[in-house]
Image 1: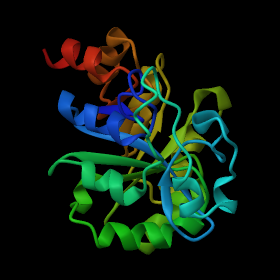
Image 2: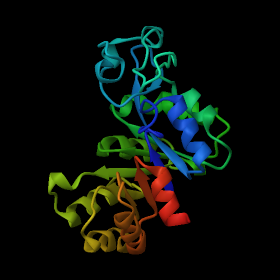
Image 3: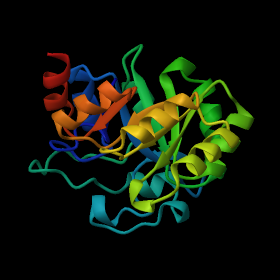
Length: 236
């Protein structure tokens, strides 16, 4: 599967509805977005803890209401007339064509899970098309305890330098369905993950040669900032 990282973020503001809509137009298998919980319990799609980088105005997410955040404008890439707003989880879900996947990266803690699962259960998306991902093991552990129907992937950056066997053991202990990582060079790591009965996924891969290598090794998905180029190379 080819997953658009924060949408087509080379062209449109990351995590914006136009970035996601452009991804669907390309025919990607899914999108990846980042999600936080607001002060009033709403779920919005934004990567950072605050809005400064993407809105040029600083508002801390967990101290702000949805109304506060909707008054801000996302910084556009060249077109100042877009008037783009930070989308909610509901708006992102509504953008997805039937049968496409959404990788939901949780950027805060387990407190988001109850409202998240409530929204997901009330949406028209199939549980098979929802994947929850997080660097925080407690998020994945609680997700699987609350509703194991949803897949949960444990995120890992190779910069952390953790022992692969211990990482895999932790993923199994929290009942993760898979591990998603930025590994580009260790086939042994991929083999170990798959041999443990876990899915292996790759992020954020923008080099088509590396993507092809990872697919040959057994990666189930490639998350990329450049889905158009990767798809042309991989899918023809």
